[in-house]
Image 1: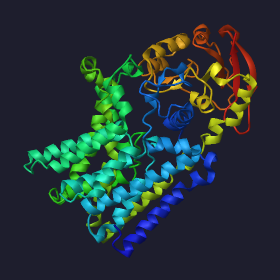
Image 2 (image 1 turned 135 degrees about the vertical axis):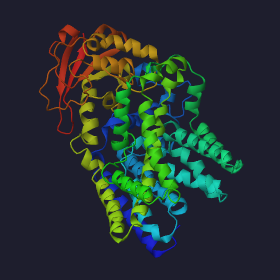
Image 3 (image 1 turned 90 degrees about the vertical axis):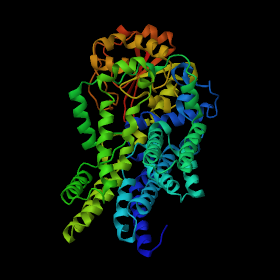
Image 4 (image 1 turned 180 degrees about the horizontal axis):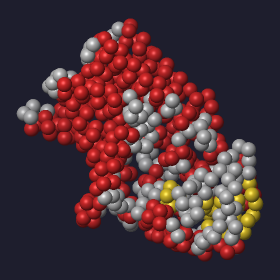
Amino acid sequence: MMETRKERRYIIFALIVLALYLSPLFILQENAHIRVHDNLDSNLAWYKVLARSGELFGGLNGVIPQIINGLLSRNAFGTEYSVIVWLYAVFPTMIAYGFSQALTRVIAFLGMYLLLKKHLLPGERWIVLNTAAALAFALTPFWPSGMLSTLGMPLALWAFLNIRNGEGSLKDFLVLTLLPFYSSIVLGFFFFLSAMGIFWLVDVFRGKGWNFRFLFSILYMSLVYMLVEYRLVYSFLFKGEPNSRDEYFHAQLPFWRVARLTLKNYIFGHTHVMTVHTFFILPATLIAIYFVYSKKLWKQEKVFVFLFALNFLLSLWYAFWFYEGWLPLTKRFHFMDTFNFARYHFLRPMVIYASFALALKIIYLQGFNWAKTAKGLAVMQIILLCFFNDEIIYQKKPTVKQFYAEELFQEIKEHIALPQEEYRVASIGIHPAVAQYNGFFTLDTYNNFYPLSYKHQFRKIIEKELAKNKMIRKYFDTWGGRCYIFTAQLGKRYMIKKDSKRHLKDLQLNTAVFKEMGGRYIFSALPIDNAEENQLVIEKIFVSKLAAWKIYLYKTL
């Protein structure tokens, strides 16, 4: 891989930048600031719940006792053959998180570098641009629990292109074998592999032969995923009782909102596959396409032109997946609602950063001043991404320690003084993941795969609150992944910090149903002014310097 001293120096420099970028996670650990959405509020708590549940290797019909009265399927927490599950089972939360981040970013860098060096920008002349683009790609603020689901795509594409070109070796099949153990097929690689299948078909139609070795490699990696994610395959093929995804309806947007969403996604990206491409990458690609057009470089730069068009088409596809015109088809073919085909846009990080490298090359070739511009754009993109470090972006959010507030919830546990499995709790104004992380058995949860009958039963608790607020009613009824005690007053706010002066007024909960389901305590982030009307009594108020929340502990009468 490292053919020259110059190449070694640049790669070492890139790895040092990655180490510095990751250092706050290892230095600060629980005092670090990290993403809350689809991270602290869910996945990190799930890993801990799974590790202590005794169901890590649970059967296909196993359940997680701690959540929603043992009705949450073990399969909802994914495969035990995922490395990330074992990181959290073996190491403390933030050590596991740091290792996961480091592993993902280093492999992302190496994968993009190999792809550019071998297939897109070969030659020693482009070492600087290849290293810069690969480093920038590795610094993107990817979704943490996605692992290599998107950032591993360049490495997989490198291996597939080697095989397609007849240069494949054991190392390429080793890549295709190992990647499924640290990525998810539904969070990226289903869409990547189906794109590879289309790629193979295009080759066939263009008269390049059947290339059975390339086809076999695609089928081989798909098979490895099927074996690793056997729980997902089982749940898909052997559908049991209706689940919460059966009430997920995506086809709701009129045409004008679809057009707006297309542009929004194209210009700004998506939270689960953040590319931070707006300020420097987008201008670079537009400048490059101008040179391609003005100098008629269509044939010489056909790969760049293809990626440039594909980038926009992926945004268009993402937006149109939510177009209300799909409704007749979704009613006829239910899987179109339960499976999120919009995620083809998860290919965009690879597409955007590969096209960025090619755009920089095109700009670089336009003369001395343009060469300096190309290098400047690369440097500015890397600097920009460094400012997207979690410790900077989320500095106003609670730290991991403040979020999970273990000492505070230990006090609550000791105050209740009953085995946690003997009673059920729910939260208002804070994510139920906090209680789950601390060992409490919860009636509320954040999961997108649980019995539909439970969702309907839980809805009775908050029925009157949903009736007062259209936003949360639609949010719960047409998705329901957040099975929370929503209130009309708070809406979709469930991170009410301890310095809030607000009170919950005119709350209307069906505590009779709550009690029928085993509910005994409510952890509220705010005082409930009409607690008695809801058959609730305040037990004690808990507050700590180390916690982000003040917990008003209410008990059912």
